Image (cartoon, rainbow over all chains, first blue to last red; front, side, top):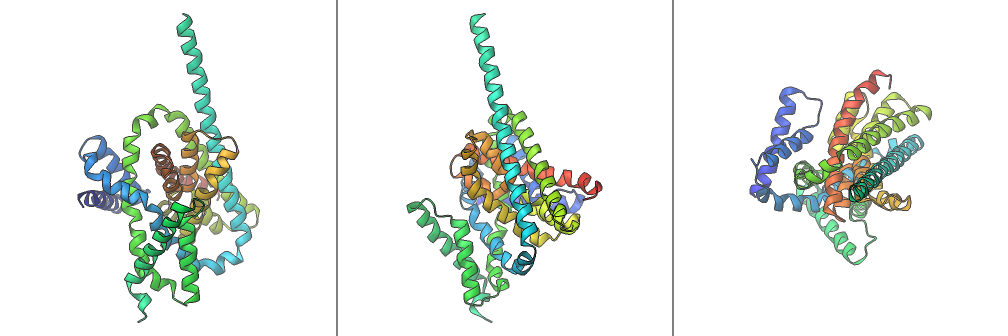
Length: 125
Length: 227
């Protein structure tokens, strides 16, 4: 329960900061950033939150069910504009997915190759 | 008042159906608990003529837990921070290119296919996590509720098709898959890859958070550019 209280505290803190400062960042992201800072500064010991966090993350997809079910209300609009929405939706999912994946893998491999070359150099030298 | 209008209905039905599909997934790995639970509940509401608003009285209790679950992403990020730091350039570069190409491609295609600016802004922020995409949509003239739905559908599609598609295209590196999924499919994709490895979940959660920040920051110049 203490774990849940800690997470709720940071969610509330994020919400309050967003309300008071009008930062153009969502409350949950502010809460997440604060929580990460608190973990690094050891204000929050990892073992107090680990169990609750892993439970919430394990079943996270459950919490999305009501949001998806809520899309029922938008069926008429979706039916009317399906072509534009599907066209844009599919391309803007697949393009960044493949470009991002390819770029990260490419950069990591390039770095690995460079390091191996340097290592070989050191051994020979 | 109908029985379904009690919050208990939405909560109990969702948890029971979800647990059922989780159990089925443990026996048949192709079962998709999120997709199938949602489809089954939608079908049930339509067939039994239960208003969505009645279901949401309980459903909103469950979707509220997305808040603490988002904060909880700090745990895998913190535990893997050292490893993320060691590859920060490729990771940061990937997230930036992903967030920008997502925003631009969705907006340009809507306008090119004859859609309006409000429709473009409804779709553009959808690679960010739901609370962020809704805010950005609202800020620049989209329909936030529809953005929420499209965000979730995008995450769902990405979480199902993303990992196999990436592997099919020769992208097998766990870090690369994690960044690509987190950048395009936010929390739903993160929940999916977290099941395969804690590292992929951590890097995906990190990418999701940063994508959210990038999308909210990049939206302003795009708005000024005339989107």
